[in-house]
Image (cartoon, rainbow, N blue to C red; front, side, top):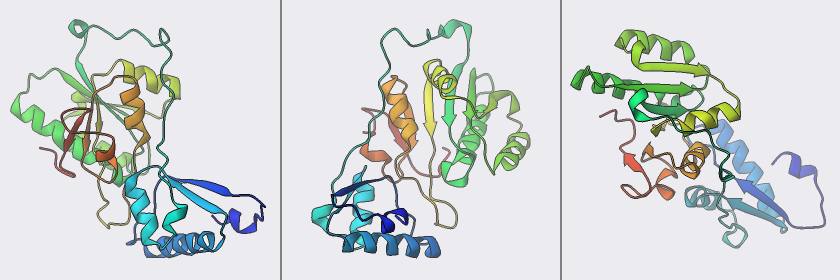
Length: 232
C-alpha cells in the first residue's frame, strides 16, 4: 500500500488482499486503514480479496463496494505420476501433520493438548504428530511437549524445503490446522494456504472453525471442522 502511493500509473491497479489486520492491533490497524482510504481516493484501484471473510473486512474500512471483487486463490495441482508413493499402513504409524510457523494464532499448543487427551484415552494408540516449521514459540512448544510427556508421539522437523513438505503431505494421513484468535485478539488467520495444498493432494484436513476456513471446508464433506481453541 505504501509503495502504491508513489505509483502514478495511467491504468487500473488490481491488488490481491489475503487478510486484514485485526482492529485490536490498533496502531497497525489504523495504518492499514489510512492506506486503504488512500487507495479508495484513487478511482483506478481495485481490491481482490481471496475470501468473503476478508471482503467483509475491507468494506468495513469504507472501501467502495463496486471496486471490491472476490478472487479465489488457487494452488498448483500435482502432476500425475510425479508424487512419491504413499507408504503402506501396515509398516508405519498413523501420521497427523501440521505445517505452520510457531506463532500463537497457528494453535500448535491446542494440537499438543489434543495429543495428550488421545494418549490418556488409549496409551496404545499408534500415531505420530509431525510438525513442520519453526518460530518464536519454539522453546515454549518444546517445554509443553516435555511437560505433557508426549515426546515419543511428536516429531518436530524444523523448516523444510517445499519438495520435502510435499513429500510429508503425501505420506501423512491427516493435516491438522488448529488456527485460533490470539490471546490479545490482535492476530488471526485469513485462509491458510496449506489447507488448499493438502486438499489438492487428497490429504484429509481437520481444522478449526476460524476466520475464512469454513469457506473451503464443508464439515463432513470436504474435511472436518472443530471448535476453535478446543483440543477435545
